[in-house]
Image 1 (cartoon, rainbow, N blue to C red):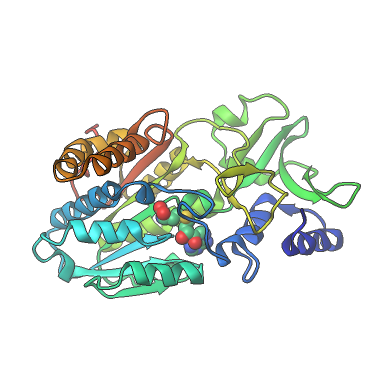
Image 2 (image 1 turned 60 degrees about the vertical axis):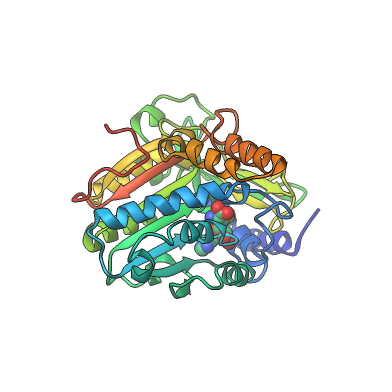
Length: 366
Ligand code: SAH
C-alpha cells in the first residue's frame, strides 16, 4: 500500500538521490503533517502498541517512588523540573503523582515538563493529568525545558523512536545503508559508495569483528540527546531513568522494525501509518553519560529493577483489597512487566545521576 508520505519520499529520492535511514525515520515519524507521531493514536490497547505504564499502574507508581527518593537524596530542592520525554497518554506520570501524594513537600517542588511532538497526545496527556497539582508545560524538544533548577527525567520507550543510521560492512569498508529506489520506482535499501566516517562510532569488536554484509547501527541523535541530559544533570543536579528495549554490548545488526495495530509490517509498507523503532544501544548511552561527567547506574534488566523497587510487595498490597478478577489482572500485569520471556529481560533501565548523589534504588550496587 502506498501512502502520501511514500509518494513524497519517492519523488524526493528521484530528484536528489538516496536518503539515510535516519532521514527516512525522521520523515516517517516526525514529518510535520504526515509523520506517524503527528497523527496520534499510537499508544494503548486500541493503538499500535502497548507500553509498560498501560499494562499496570504499578509501573508508574514504583517510578514515582523512585523519583521521590531521588528528590530526597538531592536534599529536597524547593523546585525541581520533572521532565518526561514522550509521555504517551500521560499514564506513567499520573500513577507516579498519585503514588507520591504522601511525600511531604514533593509535589510542591515539582514543575512538570512534557516533551511531546504529537498534538493529539498532548491533549490526552492534559486530560490524564487534569487535577495534577503541579503546573504542566509542554515542549517540542528537550532543549526548551528551563535549565534553572535540578532535573528529574523519565524516558520510557522514547529513545527507540530516535533516528538511527545504519552501516554495512563491505569489501570497501563500512558504508552507509540508504533508502533509494528499486527499478520499479518503489522504495528499497541501497548502499552508499565509499566508506563512512560514522564507522568511528562503532566499537572495535563490531568494526573489525563482524562478517562482510553485516549491518550495524549508530545513533548520533540518541547520543547527542544523552549528552545534553547528562550535562544538565551534572550542572543543575538531578537524576534520570531511561527505559527501553535494547542491548548492552556489541552490535545487534539491523533492528529497525515497523509495527501497526500490534503486528509487524514491512518497513516500506505503511510509511507514516506504522511505528518505526530500533533497539536502543545502552552501552553507547551509558558511555556517553559517563563521558559527559554524570554517574551511571545499571543498565539493569527491567524485571530486576522493578523487583528491587518492590513490585511483588506492591502487587500483594493491591491484591489484598481487590476482587478475584482484579487480583488476577494485577498478577498478569506484573508478569508481563517482569517475566524474562515478556518485558523483564529485553527491556533495560539505565539510571543517570549527578556524581554527588548516591546510587539510585533499583540497581544492584556495583
Ligand atoms: N512513554 C510513553 C509513550 C511511548 S511512545 C509510554 O510509555 O506509554 C513514544 C512517545 O514519544 C509518544 O508520546 C510520541 O508521540 C513521542 N515522541 C516520539 N518522537 C518524538 C520526538 N522526536 N519528540 C518528542 N516526542 C516524541
